Amino acid sequence: MLTSEIVKRLALTCGFDMVGITTPDVIPDDKERFHCWIKQGYHADMEWLARSMDRRTDPSMLLPSVKSIIMLGVNYFQPNAEVIPDGYGLVSRYARGRDYHKVIARMTKHLIVKLKDSLGSKTDHDFFWYVDYGPFLERAYASKAGLGFVGKNSMLINRTFGSWFFISEILTSVELESDEPYSSNYDHCGKCTLCVDACPTGAILTGNVIDSRKCISYLTIERPSHIPNELADKTGSLLFGCDICQEVCPHNKRAVSTRHSEFLPSAGVGEFLDTQRVLDMTTREEFLDLTAGTPLTRPQLAGLQRNARIVLTNQSNKRS
Ligand code: B12
Image (tube, rainbow, N blue to C red; front, side):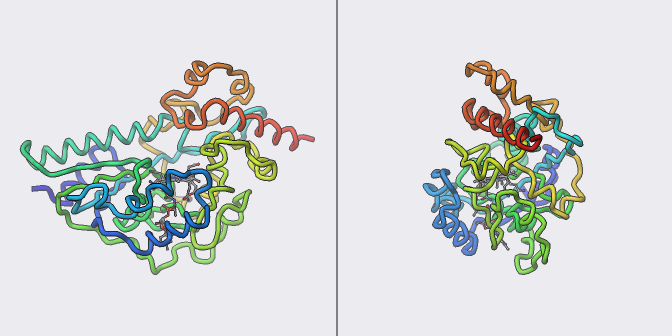
């Protein structure tokens, strides 16, 4: 027999830092919030988000036999160096080491093997997993499974780890005891507006909502085209991704460094990249030599070079 207690013990032994269990019902408030977000155009060019609206808000469309969802968290926090050297661009923390999709996929598959072992080799129970890219509202279900609450910056914030953690999930036909959700009628941010005030482009809106069209993370990672000057001017030395709304968050004062060496700068591209080195690359091979197996493949060479040019311009404007 597989109990919630066994699932949690196995998840921790597989390297997960957080685990919570919840039921797979549609969450009407989150469905509504997601639909409004798309209707407002806050998803920018990420059309794939609008294409999967029904599946994204109803887990039974992903796995018809689903009875429980195991929500998992992996801490990736690491401190920053004091200063960014001139001519270098900053890589956000989540992207400095190996690609978390790959690292966490491995951990999640390992956990499923252990869960199946506990049920016996002849089990006909279903297990289905995602990390990030599946049509699944990860923060909504993770909050329902007790992993954290949604802050004004829309990050899921955990009492122990703050918001510096990745989320993945296993949908299963096994019926498990659920955890208590984080209370949604208590406002954990209170009157604090540090993240809203610190966002250089004003991307954090009322109602714990991000307008991706202005979010530096979107602009430097997902946006396929030119970044308008009025936004590019505000991205400073940020070459890939943005951590500003998490860095200023008081809940992140308690952050503890990750125990996963795969996410450390030494395992990937590092904390800073020499912008000239990025601009000097001419072939896909050179680009992959630098970025293969890391999240930096996402914007491709042209996108990374666009960001590097913006960093150089911003640094030179700052000097003059
Ligand atoms: C699209 C996307 C983006 C977009 C849009 C971000 C956004 N805020 O929506 C962009 C490219 C901008 C982005 C940026 C980042 N992302 Co991103 N992204 C996603 C993705 C694929 C979908 C998010 C989504 O559906 N957004 C639409 C909005 C409406 O949904 P939502 O933010 O999940 O919010 C829901 C709930 O939180 C809830 N909710 C909202 N407000 C409230 C208020 C209350 C009171 C309650 C109870 C609930 C509630 O309702 C919403 C709708 O159901 C998820 C993975 C996934 N499959 O979910 C990762 C994900 C959210 N990203 C993640 C990360 C790490 C980042 C970055 C930190 C990366 C970086 N350093 O640059 C930034 C952070 C920017 C930010 N402040 O959100 C992590 C977040 C982990 C965490 N602890 O929260 C995720 C979960 C990926 C993962 N598997 O780990 N991302």
